[in-house]
Structures are given as C-alpha cells and as structure tokens.
Length: 233
Ligand code: CA
Image 1 (cartoon, protein in one colour):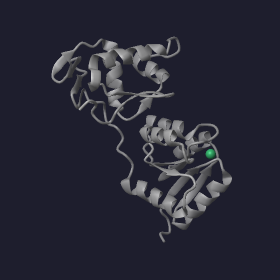
Image 2 (cartoon, helix red, strand yellow):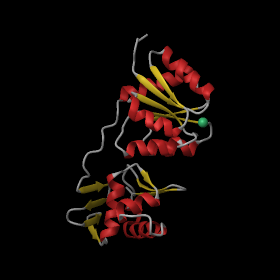
Image 3 (cartoon, protein in one colour):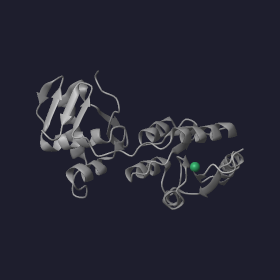
Image 4 (cartoon, helix red, strand yellow):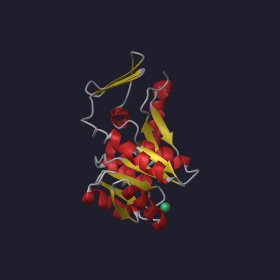
C-alpha cells in the first residue's frame, strides 16, 4: 500500500456514503476531506487543492453538475469522478459533457470506487484550453473569425456578426453546454435586459444556414453546446 497518494475531496451529503468512501480511499493510501454540500465543496477545491474530487450529483447548495461546470469555467481541471444514483442517465451524460472525467453509479463496490479514482488520476488533468483558435475546421464546416467567413463544403455562407460570434463561442468550447443566460452574457454582453428566446432565434438561424453541417446541439432543460465531433459527415 502506498503511504500517501494525495488528497481526495469527497463531496457527498449522505454521511454514511461519505464515511464509506473515506474508508475505501484511505485504505488505498489516499488522504480525504469531506464536504457535505456543493458550496462548501466548491470552496474546498480551491483551498485544499485535492488531486481528485469524488462528486455526488444530488447535493444541497450546488448540485454536482453545476459544480463541475463552474469548476471548468474557472479553468480548474482537477479530475472529477461524478457519483450518480441509479437511473440518473441524464445527469451522468450531462456531467461528462460539462467536464467530469468519469462517473460511478450508486451503489458501488469499494474496488470500483478506488479503481475509478486511480484511473482518472492516471489519465491526469486535462490540459487547460489554450487561446481560442481563429479558424475552426470541423468536418464540412470551416469558420474563420479573422476573415469573418463561414464555409460549408467549401462554399461561403452569409453570417451576421452576432451569428458568427455565437457559433464561434460554442466552437471555442466544444463539448461544453451553456445556458441561454450564459450565452447572452458571453456573446451579447449582457443577460439582464434581454429575452432569453433571442438565443433560440439565433440558433435556429444558424441551423437553417448550416443544415446538417451544424455542430450545435440542444440539451433539454439546459441550453446549447457544440459537439466535439463533426456533424453531418
Ligand atoms: Ca446526495
């Protein structure tokens, strides 16, 4: 057994489950810290700099999916193992899209938990995203922000400045999902005085222009994102 494999932060509101996770992980050589709600856990990541976070999805304060998204948004790529209740398929998928590294379904065995934590640590933190590229080439789609051009299959498609800014923002953060309010803040510059449906209108316009080459995905109840893989190949 390794004497010290680093600190794992357990964010779990069920004290029994948290105690079990602590037991399994410490037996394998990790140190552990437990946070009982999402807000406390989020603060603990910055304070304690754990090597990994074992994160329950259903949490008071801040749910695990929001936790994960906010962590990645602030550029923190600490490995996250998301723990979901059986049947929470949507949470699991959403969590992975928002930057979780792996997931574990309750109930789990001690061996499973430890193996997953070891695995996310072996993979290491994901590289922080670099500066946004000026050109996105994704399957049949090519978006050149500098020249303000969009091409599908080599043919130019007319885009307004806002349509291009929205598409480029989603492509800059491929695989992430944004709420309408976030997109209004980041693309339009404010969300306070705008009808969120304007985002839906712009997404429709972009989809109409790009057809099957559109990389934009709708995540029900959350918002929009760009697929990591090329669309309409
Ligand atoms: Ca819970």
